[in-house]
Amino acid sequence: MTRLSNVVAPSFSEVHKDIKRDGHTHYWLSGGRGSTKSSFVAIEIILGIMYDPNANAVVLRKVKDTLKESVFEQLTWAIESLGVEDYWHIPEAKLVITYKPTGQEIRFRGADKPKKIKSMKFSRGYTKFIWYEELDEFTSMEEVRMINQSLMRGGSKFTVFYSYNPPKSANNWVNAEMQLTRPDRLTHHSTYLTVPREWLGPQFIVEAEHLKLVKPQAYEHEYLGSITGTGGEVFANVQVRQISDEEIEEFFNVKRGLDFGYAIDPLAYGTMHYDRKHKRLYIYHELYKVGLSNRSAYEHIITENKNNDPVKADSAEPKSINEMLQYGLKIMGVKKGPDSIEWGIRFLQSLEAIIIDDLRCPETAREFLTYEYEKDANGNWKAGYPVKNNHAIDMTRYAMEDEAYQFRQEKPKGPEKTFNFNSEKPKPNAFVGSKIDDSYIAGGWS
Image (cartoon, rainbow, N blue to C red):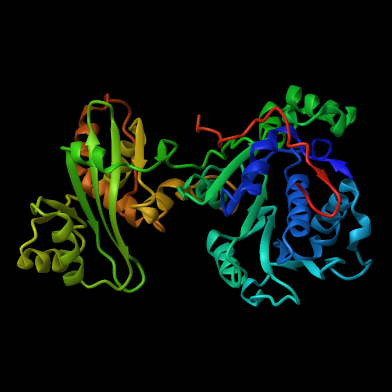
């Protein structure tokens, strides 16, 4: 029989309460070394299975060989720390932990081949709990989504945990995904500073303080879980949030851009407002689709663009532009000249903020958040900008062509630079509670 405040750090108090009342489905728990986020998840899974007789769990890491000495041991620790060893069967060799009173199970899987993770059948209940440990080791959100689609079946309520140390790059898919808006997601950030010092031991504190002194940036990333950046981020001024209908009604300097695509590359069309005074760009509508005919694209555009205001498009597609002109769309190709890509991107980089509604424009948000310079074989950043995964970015450049040209004209004259052109973020929301729910546990929780 154990008091929860003896095993769960105070910073997780509000998250614990949220899980207890089924507040969210997806829990993104980021943090640095010693933040006890993995210990917290293990405790919640053990408690959750003991409380709900139909709950089972599947725990995943990217590589199967890492399961035994990481998450398996973490859950074994949770069982022992809660003082409920008599209720659980923990085999020496097999990767499964069983709750003896009902036969409910915790199963462990590697995601080396995610397509092989199928919907699981249990003798009792369904997969209520899913835990992705070291989320940043996974390839992409598409991989995670594929696994969730297989496992989240047969029940009415699911709780999915994602625990990870944030990668350095703000453009990494994990950091980008965490910023996207989902009403069923709760994000929480923790550090060792929110954990009772006696839990960590004096040597842990010594090592952390030494690194802080000699390598402060490494300390920020490793111990505080900060996104310190790699230097390869193209856009450091992106903000992702919902843009309300009331805001949109007030927009007056509206711009529209179109990047053609069909078989492999998507067609990207977008609508945005440019606040010239405050140098803020608001992107609030997108069409982003592969295999879309010009006729279908026109029908979408003219429905959204009710006044048939001008659309700036890729001038490399004169046939497509002419076709849309025949349909009646006011469309014109942008003027492509030397350094046009460079100055278009430099203009976007110069803005105070590029604000993207990720619910209305999910692909545009994804492109801007993950666009990064490429490296050569020696690990050095290449000159120029990548010409992949940039369709919405190109669409935005086209829409803002006039402003980018004016930006170039106004730049102070300096040494000539030749380009080849034809070719402090906010930290995650953190709950910092002062006191954990002191429920007692003996075969369940209160």
